[in-house]
Image (cartoon, rainbow, N blue to C red):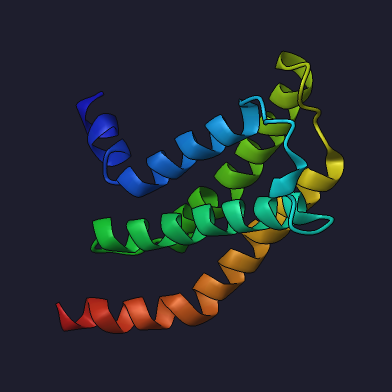
Length: 135
């Protein structure tokens, strides 16, 4: 149990992001439409939230491990955010009367995760690998 908790706490920014996404997904929004800058801004927000979560998971994994296992990174930065995204959409439709689960929101969440994983694999990974070799 201690080992699990220690590993869990190696990802503080990711945990903060998960809690923030949970809050933003379930809180009751104001009826003020002045926050909408353009049509579809909520889809952009979904994309950015989940892309950011995946990138932070990549970075924190690199920061907290000496040996990098890409299967673990894939599970953590792809499977976990996609699963969490699906659960959030189901919770929105089942637990709230002021939110609705939207399949297109889920699609944009997954698109953000895919984009972030590609970006991290092809851009961030070489930079972090170079930095790890310096240690």
